[in-house]
Length: 180
Image (cartoon, rainbow, N blue to C red):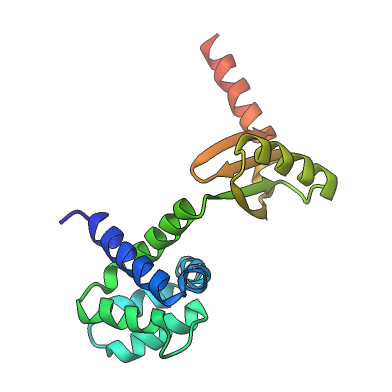
């Protein structure tokens, strides 16, 4: 079975279950937190793949990382995933659920990357342009500082990258000079 197929099927099942129970919004927020936790906590990945750790401990760790409570819809779902020996897919299931939820609710994830903190009016101008281009979509905007871009900014909309950074301009200039 395809690696993407299993997470997508579980995510769809969780989304359907969550909608029926009125938990879709809560689980969406919890899985966004879980995805962030997975990217920052290496121990979480190791515990999930360790066959000697009991499923109840794995479940409690994932719930804590997601900010969920025992007995919740997410708790029952995680136990199902663990029972079916699908722990290795948990992060991809969470990512698939978040993607599915965003598609269903017309939400675009927008990240603004800056070398240093831009003034609020400049960030507002950038977000206004993005809003006009995405006509009617709800935007989930996050900001990140990355000194390596030297100056300017980069806007990432889902998987589309709009790069107006000094670093990018310098790379283009270097390529032009190398061609001559």
